Amino acid sequence: MIVREELRIICGNANRPLASKIATYLGQKLTDCAVTRFSDGEVFVQINDNIRGTDVFIIQPTNPPAENIMELLMLIEAARRASAMRITAVIPYYGYARADRKDRPRVAITAKLLANMITTAGADRVITMDLHASQIQGFFDLPHDHMYSSVLFNNYFRALELDNLCIVSPDVGSIKLARSTAKALNAELAIVDKRRPKANEARVMNIIGDVEGRNIIIRDDMIDTGGTLCQAAHYIEDHGALEIYAACTHGVLSGEALKRIEDSPIKKMIISDSIDQSGRELSEKFEVLSCADLIGEATKRIFDEQSVSSLFEDQPMTT
Image (cartoon, rainbow, N blue to C red; front, side, top):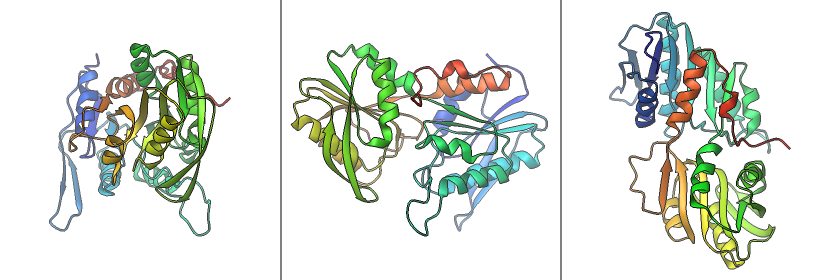
């Protein structure tokens, strides 16, 4: 347990419950700071405690609304001007990560833009978890620790002791994650082939692999509208699958996602608390696993200048 005064945990409004759990894991209290709004909606940030010469970890995912990004940038800026020794931006969910390349004319590479803003604000280090695209790590000219939630989800499914198991990637972009999960759980692998006519709209075309008579885990890094996931679940059910589980690290859950999941053949939808779900009424079909201990342990090791590589158990491999 860390009790030294040099460590400070700061958070904005994006995911205060997770920040509180991380602080508890570290045996710390959240640093007192005001993150409020003016009447016109502008963000106001003030750190009320003395942080001069301290090692500051700012916990703030960047999911919508966009004010969450402003809070993160302003907290970094405030900590820099308050003479913090080192500032680490802890971003459990890195928003805007889907815009990671110029795949059509005249579009912004927003994942790089956000990285630039975080760097310019004054961050010295970044911690993220299950980035939508691994190459985003290279968008930062800062030390970057990329955490993997696989250990949380794999342990959950090991405890279920499912027989005749097959891990399904809902699209080609999640193959590495699904493959590593299949290897860790000693399961078969299948891939859903889909086409995406436009953003937030997917159409299943084919399935590569055998799902008939198997228990299924659909593994992905995030679930937004739920269209891809639920289409895959229906398609797999039609091809003779038994019980269908889904595990997605980041529960964005926008639009009709909750209804789609409720109406789908998915038996259990497992997500992490990288995005705050306290404002939603999730049904019993949902299971939320906390990533607080994982991020808290990474924070502790970085603070103590220790290796964090042992935390990369069950990580998606590049081969």
